[in-house]
Image (cartoon, rainbow, N blue to C red; front, top):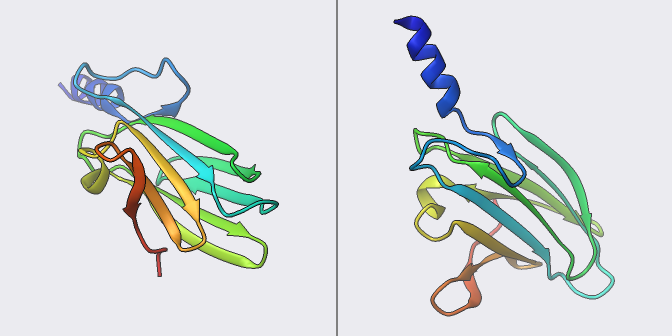
Length: 135
């Protein structure tokens, strides 16, 4: 019995990876795209993590982007957070919060601006869902 439960838990665990990541039929592959919109000649350094996965540091030129994919966990508590810095400025933000984002997007597109990150609104097709940086 415990072997079946353990096997089931392994199958249902969330995964981060590239295209082809699979899970249970009702699980969706989520994609987060991060675009640097800080301004010309400003490079954005992004370092994203979850509780289980460190996605490493990425340098994005102006208008450059980086993306990652994952499967949400069954408990609907998936969280990815990123530290972001440019010039002499450092901020952090929870780039994917299951409770906040699972209805808004399967492909979550973020525009990083000095005032804070803004998500693409599927209805307006504008980056008008904006949040403040984490305290």
